[in-house]
Image 1 (cartoon, rainbow, N blue to C red):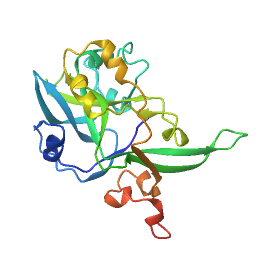
Image 2 (image 1 turned 45 degrees about the horizontal axis):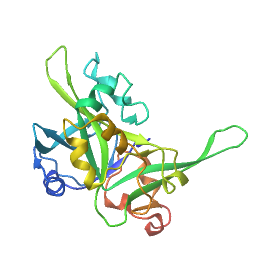
Image 3 (image 1 turned 90 degrees about the vertical axis):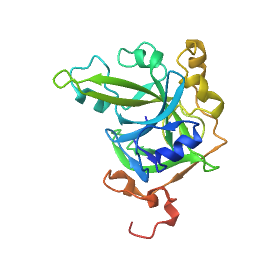
Length: 235
């Protein structure tokens, strides 16, 4: 799964990178984005590409409560077309969630009991410093009591490549720049979309241990993305 990521770039900077218009005032500087946080995502409306704000954790349009989205932070690529929670969004409401890195935890277990005995956080990012383009879905939910609209999103995951497999058994679907148009376009055939739901090549990526400070969602700052060797003793 993907349960935490870094999104330090502003909506304006992301708009320049993804050839879009900023539609929300998002300052960036967030290095420990957690479920239910507001995130920037790239979407396309009637041919116009924009960077807008969404709450992380998809609330399906049919949900009775907004609380239903707290656990839907990821959608499995293998079942996204058949899942009632995601199939409509996959067909009509796709997005790109930019991230400078995503975090995964390598867990060691007691062979006798299966209990986790150690959990080490790692960051995975592009070695060239460019942002990752995480494949996502979005949804618009209407509060039945107030009629207010809530816009939410989720991140698609797939099998890990050989780099991420050393850490975790899932990874986000990462889109190459040549895939952005097809993923965002409203009329892309399902066959083409399916072809994009694959593990990303390992070569452009780096993975390294980071401080356990990232475990606490209240911790924030660029130091969370620093390699563990750069942290002083005791942190």
